[in-house]
Length: 79
Image (tube, rainbow, N blue to C red; front, side, top):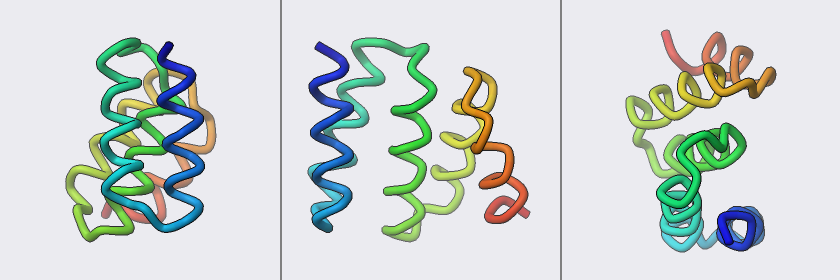
């Protein structure tokens, strides 16, 4: 079930439904707190809506859970 919310979060993010994407990624994380991809996705949405602190925390969580590209996001956006 976490994959459903993760996949739907990606679709919503791509069509600009940031609030819906945020909710879906959060639900995916609630169902599987070790899903680095969902943290990464939620971080991207938070960045889009101006929650840089929240985005950086999610990128850090994603990195700790093995999302390799999260390190670059931290370097670029989290000063």
